[in-house]
Length: 84
Image 1 (cartoon, rainbow, N blue to C red):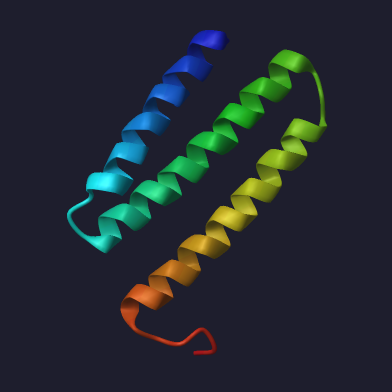
Image 2 (image 1 turned 45 degrees about the vertical axis):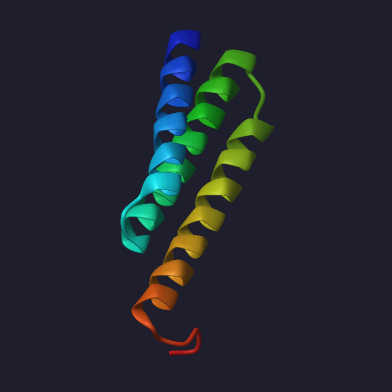
């Protein structure tokens, strides 16, 4: 199980590299979205290892905030206002 966490952490560092070196803003947005998904996966595996339910709650909250952030950033990059 811990091998999966280390693989996901390695993937997180790859996503952070893409956020910093992404050639375009949409590439950076996708990297941030994937990073959020990886963090949800880490929280889920950690919940299975530890047997604690609140890590699942953290994963759900992180997924919701990641989704809202991605939609907001996509609307901003598109040039539309937040009320459209």
